[in-house]
Length: 315
Image (cartoon, rainbow, N blue to C red; front, side):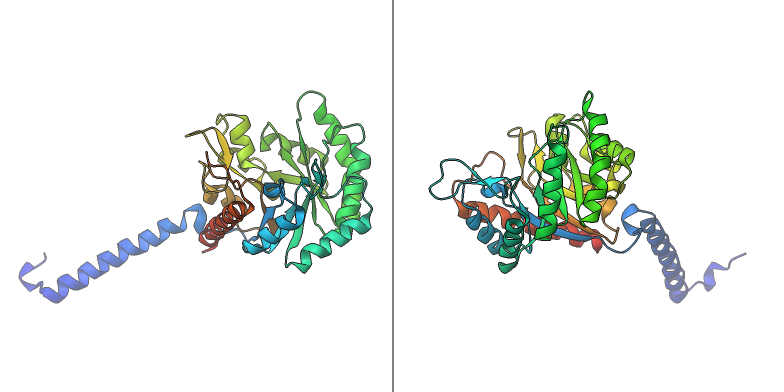
């Protein structure tokens, strides 16, 4: 039987400290059980890039200098730009352009301190001339030192099997040139593109994930965070855009919408491999940028937001 008369102040402090340590240790163990505390491997080398696409109403040179001035080290080639004296947009890289031209543009980017990571293919995989165009894009990307060629489209109806057959032809060509064709969902889900990539079964064909597209095209009926988990293992890059339903139903820049980018990127935060994060939409909801300087500011904000997210995931 305990003699309570013998319990002095020191005994109480020691017993209290022991109890506190026990609780603290239990807290550490519980914290260890959270997903973020158990990285599967070395940190992913997230590469934050800005597409030239947000600057499409201005010359390509202005896009590149704006992206460089906004603090980016990486760039992704968009589709076209309004060049001086031209009434229509001029392609960043025409589908039939010779490899030398792609090489020159790649060097032009590097001279500005921008490493190009991705280029648009500009064609759907089911198009009649898709094999020809995508093969030329692979050759262009190889010449420019660009690791990824982006394609997308709808996989409904007979298109899915056409995609599979054509990607099986293109996969070895891409690998032989040190390039990966990345496929993003356009109007559908990452679950479908993930299924297609797994059916193809070639390292030259992988997934590009666009969370904003999923939320936009499904009108919020599909949660991108859940959808992404179905194709995370096959994902090799992201087209970064956010989305929100209020005050307007609109795509927007990362961190300005309703998508939690911490949760989005967490499943691939510790792969050890390079992972381009290419900002496709950097706009602010319900606010239109009317000058290239305003686009510069939005580009910088998007980069800084993603840097904070990555730092938090890897902490």
